[in-house]
Length: 444
Ligand SMILES: NC(=O)c1ccc[n+]([C@@H]2O[C@H](COP(=O)([O-])OP(=O)(O)OC[C@H]3O[C@@H](n4cnc5c(N)ncnc54)[C@H](O)[C@@H]3O)[C@@H](O)[C@H]2O)c1
Image (cartoon, rainbow, N blue to C red; front, side):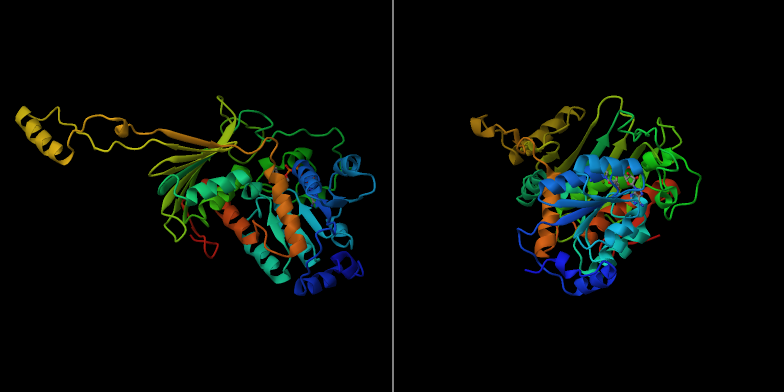
């Protein structure tokens, strides 16, 4: 079988080859090792590479605008990898089949589109895009080029979420009416106060290339190393964390998105110059569709939770609750067979009249073992050491080989990112936002 590495004959012709490849997507043998490059070799990029290597890929190049991350990439992944500050050099390489894009959010759209146009398959970190307007550009480029694009919310590949989906589909909690999900933290690092290296100098950092399309500002390392705290580069807690909750919830319920978005919150504690809230609540309407009944979603991120650090999901139905934490739990507490009464404050004669009628309708039975209502709690735990991140990369690499669809394509990714980004619009503009999840268009 011809591998794409051989097919791409000249590096100068990478973009031409990319467009040719878009017309002739090729599958490849399972033994043909996929060669990847990382663009944005920070915390998540390094984890992505580890998971991708564990899933069978080979790293051949790394790009980052901070020299220290390139030095570190060679220390960790081998001195033979190509390192460069300019990601376009990576895209021009013939030996790169796929790229992982793990830059700050404001670069996602541009690098992903450039990569697909250069004939590369793309593993694109979440949130898929930084701005609503970016979404259709990535979806369109993916469809036009025919490249494989997997968005990096790994829960969608998790066996835990798969189990939750199966349980929901089998009616384990009856009819869904509400979903709650939260992500609470209580630490400086949890609140994104990441370390700033002592060699963060203009010589070691390509500042203009970090800024990209963001407003030009003087060199200030905190903006790079703690980019999540600035709307110019990140997407706040909604884009960073709500988006994982949307992805996981959409996967479990089959939902594609809410129609109404409302968010409230504030900057309550981590007043370190950031311009995003550290407490955010989101409320979302999911009308009935063929895939699910009407339900409401309530999301919460609190970076100032003095009590605990935890995150989780509760899917609430007419007959029980399904909880996702490290595993899945289904709890059921059936309602009483008879409704009961509140007649104490009625006159005695009226009480008697009421009771007579009530007992005709609900005769008093003799208590028996059959009348005992079971309080059920079933727990499903993944094997120790299970990694959904590795499974997500495996799914991506399989798709690169087979040219079959991934679990989290650009449409899925945008349907998770869209309402997350609108949560920011709602918070900052203090208004309810409308969203059409079918067409992925925001209303007024
Ligand atoms: N899937 C997950 O669970 C998960 C977890 C954490 C982060 N993420 C996502 O991964 C992405 C990276 O987050 P992170 O925590 O690794 O941040 P990070 O700051 O640790 O890494 C980002 C890297 O990108 C580099 N960079 C900036 N502009 C660049 C450019 N133009 N070209 C090349 N490199 C550039 C930076 O120098 C930095 O090394 C974000 O989109 C984030 O939302 C996903």
